[in-house]
Amino acid sequence: MLMKTSAHSLTEQLSARFGQRIRDRLLAPGARLPSVRQCAAQHGVSPSTVVAAYDQLLAQGLVEARKNRGFFVRELRAEAPRAAPVLDGPGASAAWQTATGIAPRSPAPIDATALIRGMFHKVSNKPQPGMGVFPADWLESTFMPAAVRKVTGSRALQEFSLQYGEPMGDSGLRRMLANKLSGLNVPASPDNIITTVGATHALDIVSRTLLRAGDHVMVEDPGWAVEFARLNAMGMRLLPVPRRPDGPDLEVMARYCEAHQPKLYVSVSVLHNPTGYSLTPGSAHRLLQLATQHQFHIVEDDTYSHIAPEHATRLCALDGLQRTIYVSGFAKILAPNWRVGFVAAPAHLVERFLDTKLLGTLTTPALLEKALALCMEQGQLRRHAERIKTRLDAARSRTVKLALSAGCTFAAEPAGLFGWVDTGVDTDALAQRMLDEGYLLAPGALFHAQRKPSTLMRINFATAQDAVFWNVFSEIVRTIR
Image 1 (cartoon, rainbow, N blue to C red):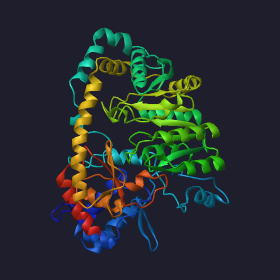
Image 2 (spheres, helix red, strand yellow):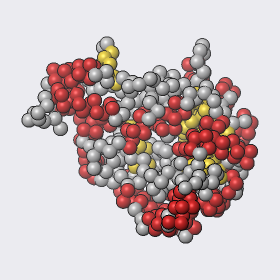
Image 3 (cartoon, rainbow, N blue to C red):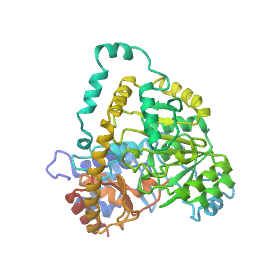
Image 4 (tube, rainbow, N blue to C red):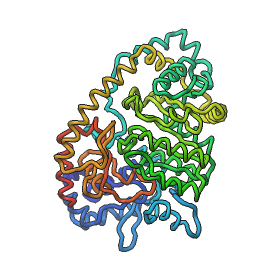
């Protein structure tokens, strides 16, 4: 709230508010600021105050003015490679439209860290519907500290902390991971598994090993925003594949294969982010046939395995780790800051992946890996996950009722941690208005390889079951309409 009694003028307060959001990446490069009239109405100030504030932002190099269009956030450093869903040159737009049936749009610049900073920036102490993880109080436990204490006795500290760990990762943890994968019918031995610094690191190892700048990579659309930004920063050419309830649009994938010979397809096949969709057996079989025919690898990101049904269709189980690579981690279910993940790979890729890991991190923290292995061995992690699932089911039920009462509809059947909600208004504009109220949203534009306006947003069922949030949401949606 802008304060007339503050030592700083309204112009200075407004300029500082936008400036901080730009520096925190809550306003991404290329984002348009509200029009002068809209901003004046939202903050209860005169248009001349807004003009003066925007002039200050211009002088600071944070925004740029575009004739007859308004003010836009500038890139604060050297621009990262842009999303490029098709080859450059003549016929590129036609190729994109032929493959997808969608007219091409010019991609907005996406900073490789903007989405991470924005999604994890604490804007207030209120529940945050845009969060990507469970609330901290859901993850609290007594068994985790006990496991850490047990493996960090004085002898253990001397034995493990004063030397590098096993290059592949702690052998005890890899045995427990192999047992876990066996329960999912994924045939991986400890020798197929490499531990990583979280699932994102596992994805990075795979792409740095198998890809080179300029390679084409098929990604789900909508899909995980951070993965788009990461691949984009590496210079990959993104080929967005529409994600349907049963799986990817295989016709679009087939056309991409003929036109671009992609090297990789990255998929969250179970409890997809952001829609909650899960792959069907029929779609999985056809996808694997396509991968064999066109010789591309599939990375199956099973980040949500701990809250998913064990009988869910997994590509790595059907394929037997031949053209598939399995990635997962424990940030969602156990402790985001432990950063323990892993990759299970075909035998012929293990050494190559290990080389990439060693070049990037040398090793992974053995003490945390041993503590995690102990939690798994004693069944504590499994029981913890069951409690989380029960609590999530109840939260999902409450959140769905609140969202429907607020006038929203669900673009996908609610499942898992996230809901894919249609608000009926531009969620980029909505997200900025909600920031003024202390709420961080995840607007739909973040989840497309080519950023474009959207009325959709992703909500976290665990953090969106707050009636106060939905009351504020409903009021702001009415003013936008």
